[in-house]
Length: 122
Image (cartoon, rainbow, N blue to C red):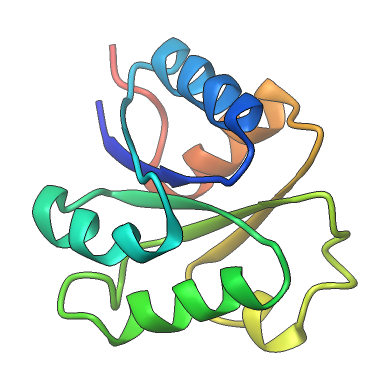
């Protein structure tokens, strides 16, 4: 079981991600807003962060996370209705950054998580 930090401005997406993570056997820590991502990462030391990509806000959170003491190497998956190809190349080319498209497909989210933290443990 891995601890995964989630921030998404859409409550329905958060609810869906919580269900997917629970089904995969992971613990979900939800950030109520973008400003809380860094303090929660420092408090909980997640194995992975799933962020809503809403243009500049998602990029800014990633940049702040990478500059923090704890977040420099934490993998980040962006969940977005924006296509992967429309996202900034600098974000997608960054190390340890993945992407899942909204609406969320549970199998694709689970696969993206496994890409970064390995298979789920029995």
